[in-house]
Image (cartoon, rainbow over all chains, first blue to last red):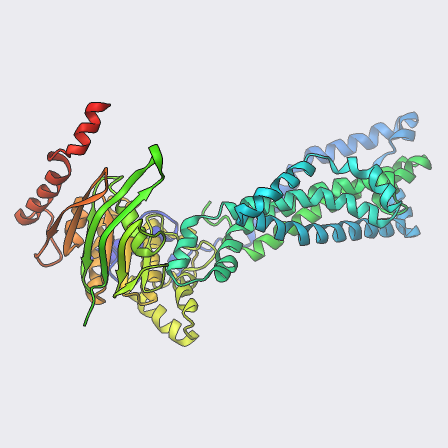
Length: 298
Length: 262
């Protein structure tokens, strides 16, 4: 029975990814020792919260310092109002309905543009990655347009579309489509050929391999494209709205400048940052739901 | 009339052309019986993987014929499943889904799949790990899943491309024992590529010894002793010695001239 005892240890090691040293003859473990030991619930969670709070002490201190300096120096406060005044500015904007209107306008533009960029970037990128023949003549076109910064398109796009949603969406689209397209292309190109071969020997045909092997294998890289694309899109949005828009967070910031309301400007800036962070978090959440296997081995 | 599982007749394989021309396989002839375990040993560059790829249907021979059960091999198919050195498990599928992959392609119903799955999970000792992802398993377990996945479509021929080369030596020996056990349980034609002579002696009915430049079969050795085999027995040590003799001690005339010119 010594073997059985040894085997249990092996089972645990194997579940943790360590190489097995001893033969396991009995059926493998099914009990809890096969999975990670369950951690005690409440205590580590409390610790994590405490850790997060502790980590932000410097940020909190800087905000407090800002408040102090700004309040004690009225000349400076005209240019950099204290955080409390920014909060009341935000409240004003919410009561007027401006903050909601501008946030929604910006989100709608980014949403539309990202949808278009995905609709074009993913299939085109997949084709570029899958077919050398296709890439041979299309890649030069992509490489011609890619280095032109999306912001450089703003003047031309105003000539074409005027100061409208369409113009902003065009700029954001240009910002997002290349990261999506190029990452998808790389992802499809880098699919492990052994996986495709394995699928073929198991009887999968081309169309099935595209869906059941190439798509999931390229998915992590496709998500990288979406994350990078969304990040750049959000920046391009603000730039586009600064120049040519009558709504949106970029417009809000610009209006703040005209009205000499630095608190409005800062409210807009913080909002842009928070939403950018949330968009990224949303994509990562989607990714972890869609790909539970992702980063398991690390 | 019954055919051999695999028939390879006068197969040549040439890569490239002009000065880059490499003869990967030269005049290879081999037959594998329906329940025969054939190991191919040889140093790298002897064309053993090329031979396997031709049998698998991944690439065509430059000339000559390769048949499986009398049918010309033109493409990969689930009658000839393959195991790879780096497992080639689908990382986004669980153990269960990996094993079911080929069965789904063959259109098996869920109940049939479940019973086959249960059979192999038990046979290769993976009970309790059905819902794990490959990244959560050790190398030996991953290769057992790959074996189950390859066997689950009930292939007539199992092709194995140095499947245990990436494993540590303990796990490798254990996998060899397990493969023998599984194969004795469900006999199939096996074409097993390795560069490990002891591995070939433990597993094979016949050992095909290949030499490089150009890749060709030097000799075929027949092993008759019952399994499990003791690699250190006089008979098997003699066979190992013979393989080494073929590969190292008898200098290849072509190689010799190449060395002189260099």
